Amino acid sequence: MENIEIHWHSQVIDALADVFMRRPPLVVIFGDTNTESLEFARLIRNHQDFKKTPLFTILPENIKLQTRLIKKLGITEVFQTPVEPGRLFNRTRQIISELETSR
Image (tube, rainbow, N blue to C red):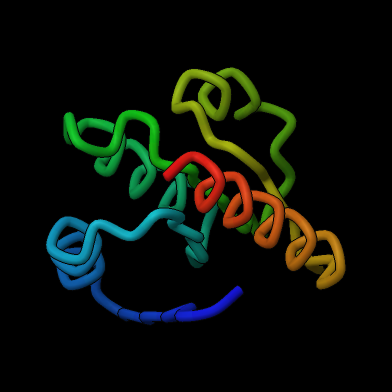
């Protein structure tokens, strides 16, 4: 996994601008609430160029009532806090490997 860049923003508008300008092959969303994370995912998915971009979300709250929305948004992987680092890294490696293979 070479050339991995991690960008962090405290403001949603800055994060969206960064995603839309850089066009990363994988977006990992860490929000303060499930609603914030899923709304950010929706904003990304609403952009035509990001309909199939893999999205990982790290959700700090129970997702029981939000599973339908998660499926509708096409979120690739959902992690709940506390995050299992091994699972996060393994899935990230897997997605990046798939993206490199498809080039």
